[in-house]
Length: 246
Image (cartoon, rainbow, N blue to C red; front, top):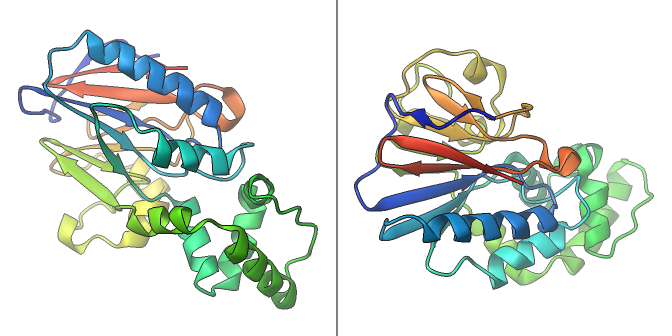
């Protein structure tokens, strides 16, 4: 894991500390452990304003999507502001529930079956329109209203000081006000390969790396927690950053 590093462009006002957590994918066990690490780390800091930013992809692939959402809703970190961002998996679910059957098929191919199981749905159907239509009805009935409201409330990005937090990234060369929502949840290669100055240091998930991917213009913290057991959090305070990891 990278050592403590000094920011080139990312800074926060005095008295603020932000904990940004990478892709969770149904690993409620790792989220519980990370919350414990954050609380312990926070006790050692003097910052008066404390915030936790979740970078999206709460569901799919791992075993406990439902339990993880319940944890975020019912057991927030005490004393922390909470910002929850929308990932591409939440995007797929919302599009599916809103009638886009192809989004449901895409979701099933990338861990949706595991998420369905956590909501009590044992899905063995195919991906014909008729089958996906039936699944949409079953899932809509099983998906708690509080979970749907949470998904619809998710922000696409969040700015604090010299940082911009987003699930996937930004399109290079495009002003923030002109960025497309889809890119912020789905972009990969054109963002990852860019050395552009985005005006703020970008903290993102979405693309798995073995260790936090620290670059001059971005920090990627998706370390594949659902399969590796290593959930990563970057801690931003002043012009310094450190990392916590399960």
